[in-house]
Image (tube, rainbow, N blue to C red; front, top):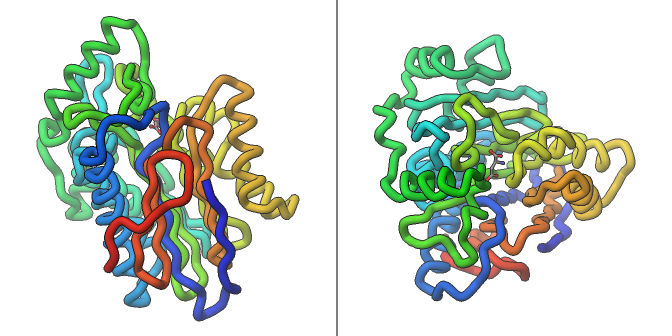
Length: 333
Ligand code: ASP
């Protein structure tokens, strides 16, 4: 849980990328190899996004690059390896927002789009809409030449086992809290993913992608695809991506709530994030969020035992963390 101060915004803004791979009740003690696997996956995501920013690319493309790496990595609850609905299907959702224009795009209830974050971006840039769901979203994505896969691509046997446990307990589980008190085993992947970025033009962007909750009702949509709940970006305040008990993040309009505190109350970003988490806790939710402003200041806050997370700036050093404490170098580029 940290805040860092950086220089002022402008055409030579300090570049910055902050990511998360989900928050939850994970505790330490599962061994350094497993932690290292997560940290390396987070570092790969950071390095992919940083490459875009360091080459003068924009924050939206950096967010897409970072999230695509995590969607393709079965360690996380997004894209391949996502959790299953009550009837054993992967229903994915994602959203993205650009801080300069407040353009936004989202998809939900999709089962065949390999990278839902790319589909959310296509909705933002190539449709007249903000959100498309289900088959309509999939037909649209195919027309945009996005990669379509058989729904079995997302499936893992271990997600199936996790679902059977949740059904037996008659519970709907946040991925990170799926009855585990250690780091996820090789077979128990977890973690909604998200990214916020600031490019050298001083423009912010945010994105989030998930498979949602284990044993969720078919058709359930969480916060991750809801602009203002799971994702928000506005150059006048901050870019935000959230993870946690989605229903409570929707009810508190968590991402917009955080941005509004910064914009209208001039709240420091850490205080704004903490206020949002307090509101969420007050109605029985938990989780975390990443916040980045147009000066490059960022906050990573969570009220769970852990949050998979990382950040990278101009020095190109990928810093990652899982448990409370400062993010530390994992890999550098
Ligand atoms: N917020 C996500 C959802 O409710 C879950 C998560 O962040 O792990 O779908």
